[in-house]
Amino acid sequence: MLGEKHDLHHEFPEYEAEIRHLKMNNNHFARFFAEYDELAHELVRVQQGHETPSDEYVETLKKKRLFYKDELYFMILKHRRKQRKKAIKAEKKRLKKKSKAD
View 1 (cartoon, rainbow, N blue to C red):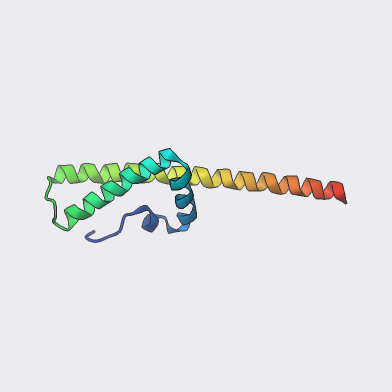
View 2 (tube, rainbow, N blue to C red):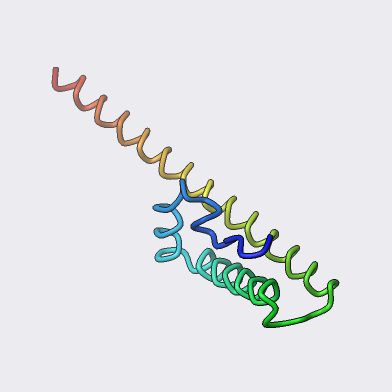
């Protein structure tokens, strides 16, 4: 749709913290994020009429954007899963120490 926002922060607002963390700490994520962002901006320029490429080219851009979006989403989920595992492990360790102290 015309004017619809497709940047990652609008697509996944519930993962704002994860996106910020991964952009700062994961070069692979940051590179994919930059590619996705560039494609999203190019498609906005096309929708606004600043650029007039062929329909085939626009479809190719949309498919690429979708590919990057899927990859980024899976990286976000993987990171979140790792964080949860770490939290569970830390909690188990804490409980084990507590039970030994009692």
